[in-house]
Amino acid sequence: MQDPELANRQPVPMAGEFFFLSRDGISFSAKSGGTEVKCSGTLYLSTLRMVVVADQSSHSSSIWAALGMANRANAVSGFDMPLATLYGEGFNQPIFGANNMTGTSPPLDGSGFVEDIKWCISFNNGGVGTFLPLFFRLLAEMRQRLSQDAPTNQSSHSPVEVQSMVNAAFVDPSDPTRLFVPQ
Image 1 (cartoon, rainbow, N blue to C red):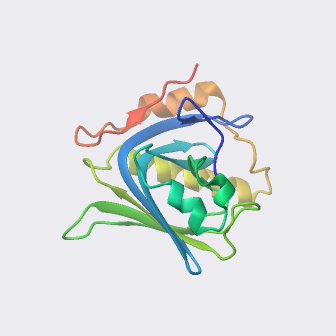
Image 2: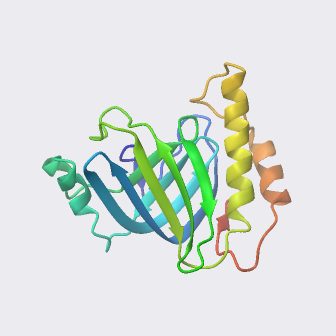
């Protein structure tokens, strides 16, 4: 988990990375050791990672202060969670409260975290029928590449394959997820 590079409040793609979707109205929390952080914002899903971009109105400046990184307290933008390293993911539908997804990610170098990070993404607005199938498909494909010792820092998807996946995605009318069309 680290602070992702952003341009115009959107994550900058890495080499060979394609973004599939974004989802507004999420709440994000993470805990590592004695450090706990929370923010609200937008979730982006790509072929390589999930990126949470904190709303400007979110209490995100306290995130880096909590990590003892006061020099970054005003520059926080969000969190980066590589699909290649996350584990223990699960989707939860509580009787009361929003649907949420939980999981664990190891800390990335320079993140300020020292222990594995237990995170939770709550979907506060609408359903998840569009988001979940794409997330689990991309996660399964990443794990398959890992089992074949393929490089994880590059996507194995071409723009045509990404377009095909987006075109074939089931769009749940109760899910406010926005799908991206690759160029």
